Image (cartoon, rainbow over all chains, first blue to last red; front, side, top):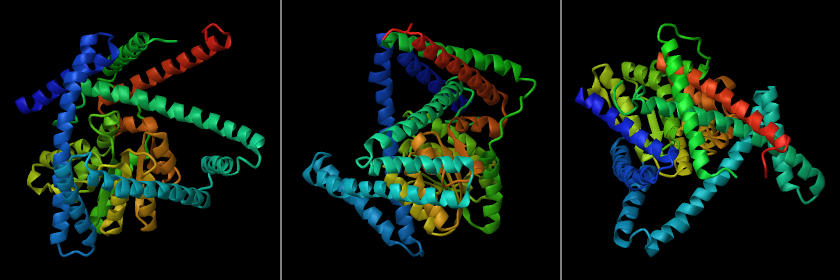
Length: 205
Length: 255
């Protein structure tokens, strides 16, 4: 019983205090939220990161020890994870080599992956038109095509393309705001269920 | 210009209206449940467990990067609620899905959900912690790494459900190349832009439908009441938007 109700009571109390910190214009509530409760959350998240890091190492060590193929990736992950840890412990996050790894490996690598998402999105759009010729699919591909066209060829026909782009942007912004508004309401109600103890994601129902 | 205090009080008003609507619908639905909206994905997820169990394969569940202490916390909770039937059935068949995430706090929560699914059946000793994996802290690296798991073999279903942006396309593309069935959904417009062309419409959860997962899967009266309260709030927001537009049109709103 203690195990069941304590996490719920703590979650409800802390959640309500943080919510009131945002909604009620009282300084002490904002201070309680920013200086104490959110700091505690950050400390807990740091411990979660340590556990997640250890789990990452464990999973890849098990993969290395297993009889399966494709062990190179696991070896690379383990060497990178341990190497980076040693470097950060030795030099700190602002250290020369730590920053070098960040600027020479991590940032270019992630930028390349982001660029890859643009290519995969285009491929997915083309595939969509081939396999699913619904009205929604056609609107999606036409809008994507207009955005591409107006981005690439803007200097050729600026006046026509600017008007076209503005039309698509207006529709896209309206749609996005509609989605975001619905999501905000969903978050509010889901959050309320957790705050009222009706949903207990952190313990057994 | 609306000042900060007024904004806070308006938000408090929205929350109070939500609480009242929630309470009223909760009392109303105690005895009779309303018809729920149909979201095929959540129904088909449970069917996927039976299929992969027969094939001797596994399901990959990508939960995304919604931190439990961040603004995407409720998206992640809703995703887990939508997956609860899948987790329960997986535990019953002892064919645990491979759950990946890029957030440490979500990694812990997802592991706990899967462990509890086994515990409910009294077989917690069968739970394997490696079924839930933290793959990388950055969303794009996470998606690229999780995509490689799909090529390792042994996975015949790919569920992309949670907080994602455009990196979701790496997961769906990898699945498509290997003929792996994909389904899922997300709440961000960028993520939806990536998932829309890749998933069949019936296999896609769009925006706020994510938060209907608890009601659709569990059919609990409290979850159903929160859906109805959400509908009431939506209408209030629509009325507010139309009202603000009209006030702006007649020039009564000031600069």
